[in-house]
Image (spheres, rainbow, N blue to C red):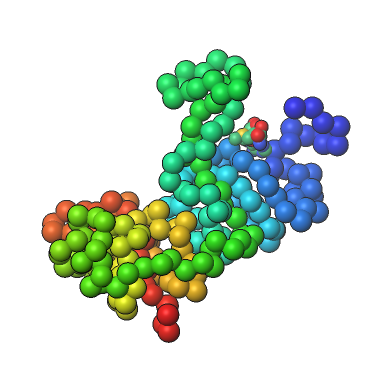
Length: 226
Ligand SMILES: C[S@@+](CC[C@H](N)C(=O)[O-])C[C@H]1O[C@@H](n2cnc3c(N)ncnc32)[C@H](O)[C@@H]1O
């Protein structure tokens, strides 16, 4: 790119780009995934509104998850599973590359992170009670069986967001894909496996169920009065 209003190379960490940041009302961009943590911290320190693209894995970063937990940042309206398509220029050896409308496009597990309100996140999930789930759930892992408790934590395992029982007041472990259905008036986020200091054995994986770790769980509880 060429520009005339900067003296340096446009690095977001430079003083002159910080001045531009401080003047901005909203920052909208797709920062390099490798600098995502640093870029997010750079936005947060300036207390700016933002809509940025990041890798889905960024949810689990220790610099990122606390912001989601504290409702200082959330995911956008687009479902977080699946991929977004990005144009790539020049030689591309990505085996999933497709030519779409004459452009080289590759699928990337990228999602929107923002601190700008949107209506979807205030729509509560429509859920069945525990008894209804056991009777009617479309998931064979749920139907006709009890919800299981973890071996090493007082919470039940809920392997699908649509199987969260509406009448359970205790703590539940849910998949990360819960986040695009999360409504802060309906549930509170208590933590994530990686961030529970009292359970260091969970680091980088989920709690144990029947002696085996469950891959990455967000720990939630129903809001009182819901
Ligand atoms: C994922 S790309 C997005 C590019 C652009 N938004 C677009 O759609 O064409 C990330 C961009 O950040 C630039 N970049 C890398 N390190 C940077 C830094 N420290 N400061 C500013 N930009 C940087 C890269 O050169 C790249 O163009």
